[in-house]
Length: 269
Image 1 (cartoon, rainbow, N blue to C red):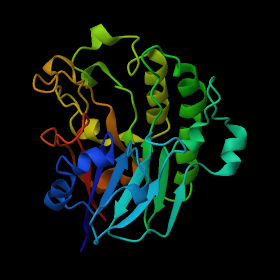
Image 2 (tube, helix red, strand yellow):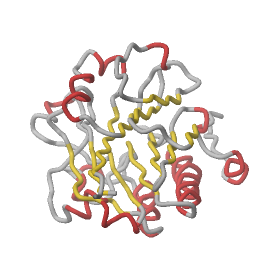
Image 3 (cartoon, rainbow, N blue to C red):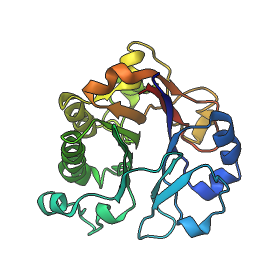
Image 4 (cartoon, helix red, strand yellow):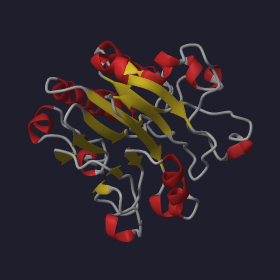
């Protein structure tokens, strides 16, 4: 009999804040087999999380209270890697104009399971003034794609997280007003195009091809969330050969512990 596996990804915008806003209740209600977090903004010892059914893997940024990712999993992975392989970092230098090395910012964890890899990723933001756009476009995006393609040579890949880009007009409420702004520049969208061209599937959009109004992030301004003036910037992408295994892809806008909401998939393995 095939086994059903639920994976959920959530940019919690600070795990310590999320814990005060119902994080544990959320985990209890949805009970994911694998939970991928971004923007934890904490080290493991700074939180008190009582989830004994999960193994926890954390990758915190060198800078305190910044970035960070985590994976909570009921099944112990075969291997876990924080960051990128050293050999890739020799080819793809990942340092921005300010000298900040994104490889040290706690942005990516890879868990290897018997039949697939799971990667949680918090993609660098291009910033309001686009000061990190060139770095994002020329360095981070090519490095990340090279990495997941390298993994895919071994076994199928599921990667998820806050990719900090709305790919198409349908992925944000006001595309015309936001053309050229961070999160909807040609460069960021091109980076996503390259992921799709490489064969990875945006599984929510694949299953809901023409459905507008599905967003995962809302600004705090102007009551945007209540009016659903949002952006879809949190994703699950999967290897082509895993498409048949995905039975559902969903967004949980009713979960309000962060300015992002959780997204998830259900696999049949």
